Every structure is written in structure tokens, then in C-alpha cells.
Image (cartoon, rainbow, N blue to C red; front, side):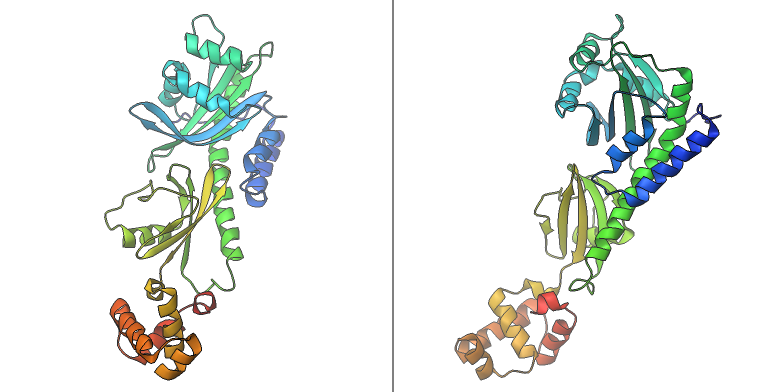
Length: 332
């Protein structure tokens, strides 16, 4: 169990002011700049030189990173850490006491050789780490703050401070993601506003970070046996275009904003069949459609039969009804 936070080491006024700023950033900062802004907000309260803020899942081979934000460190740091992760005593110590910050001296003579090498390579003497685990998704948020060689060691008060801050940081991340989804929904007004949209956030490995309930319902319509949090089709920059489901993917750093909607039955038609269906549903005759599209009446009849078969309908009224259900972007 997580140990209770008795008091913040900083003055209550300063601590409260930082929390208010963190939640303001969650509401107002973009998904792209949120982590950077929060790190800069924490610096005056809890000084550090570098930081690693991410989300991971425990696997048989150790923690599997799903999203990462590095402050003052190059991208190579994560790969180098993975190469010595089996020697990192921080993982076991932090997971043994989730929610309680632990200090590790990376340069201590009794620290594993790999950890000492990593510290020397990136000018890190000591780290302060805290982990917050979600029992439902089995994902863990971790924050590691680093101090360089020659800097003052982390104090007991600073350990308590980070322990108190971490639940708020986790909540702020979720709030920022949800707000980003709401902003995306507002941007999709107009031609798409009549479509039933469901939004979610996932990482580059297809693990859901936040999702609306309707998003899971759409996934289950395509994959009845699906069980989260990993997307059944993974995640790709071009999105997903399935039998019943369409998903648009927009990358932001190492996360993806996903917009899902149920595919219209009309989208099963070819471009030429769609043109014929649109005109036929408007009441045009075979001869009129043939003249407008530059084809023979016999070809129009062939397309109409194909449309009936694909859509499982009969008659002009059925096509007109389906056309009426589509947004203007798909009709035109």
C-alpha cells in the first residue's frame, strides 16, 4: 500500500501554488508542451538537473516503456538505460514501495557497474524516483529526477515532497489528455459533426492511455473478443480502415490522438458505384445517370445490381435513406 503523505516539506503556500499551476497547465497547455511546462514549474520547488517522466508496464523481461519525456537528456538515454536495465536497482526499490520516492546513488561503489556507467555517461550522481501504478491497466507512471556530480544530495524532505506531488502529476497528465481529446472533438465540427465519433489516446505500441467508453464499444464491434488496454490492430500513422470501423491517428510526440467512427455501409461501394447510387437516390433515371456519368444504361443497371447486393437493400428508397444518413463530406 502507498504510505500516506503527512505534510509537504515546502511551505503550504508554496506547495499549494505549485499544485494550482500544475492543474492550470493541465487545462491550458497543449499535449505537446505539457511535460516540459510542468518540469519547469517544479524546478524552483524541487531542484534537479535532468529528469525522465514516463509510463511503462511490467513484463517478464522487466519494465516495458510505453511513453517517455526526457528533460535535459538526449533520446539515447532510454536506449542506454535499457541496455543496463537488468542491473538497475531502482526498479525493484521503487516497485516495492509504490507512491514512495526512493533515492539511489548511481556513483556509489556498491552500485551495479552498469548503473555507474550510465551515471558517468550522462553526468548523473544521484536520482530520486517515484512510481504510481494503476491496478486496472497495470501501467505505471514513473518520474526520476537527477542531480549531477557535485550537486547536493536529495534530502528526506525532498523525498516526501515528490511522494506528495506524484498523485497530482498523474492526475494532471490524465486531465491534459482528456482536454486534448475534447479540443480535438471541437475541431471536428462541420462536415463530420453528424458522425458518431469516439476519441482515445494511445502510445506508439498501441497501448491505450485514455479513452472514451464509446471507443471501446466501436473496437468490440470490429473485434468481439478484444480485451484492453492494447489496441487489437496496433497503431499506425495512416490509421485503420476496417470492415466496420475507421480510425484516424494523429501523432503528438510519442503519443497518438485517435478518432474512431463506425463505417457507413455506403463506404463499401467503389467510387463509380457511389456516383451511381448518389444520382439514383436523387431520383434520376437510368438514362439520365448514363448521360451524366458517360456510361451506357446497361452499365448503370449492372452498378445498381451490385449496389443492392453489397448493401443488402432493394429499391431507390433504400438508397435514398442511406444517402440521407451520410454527412455532406461523404455525399459529395
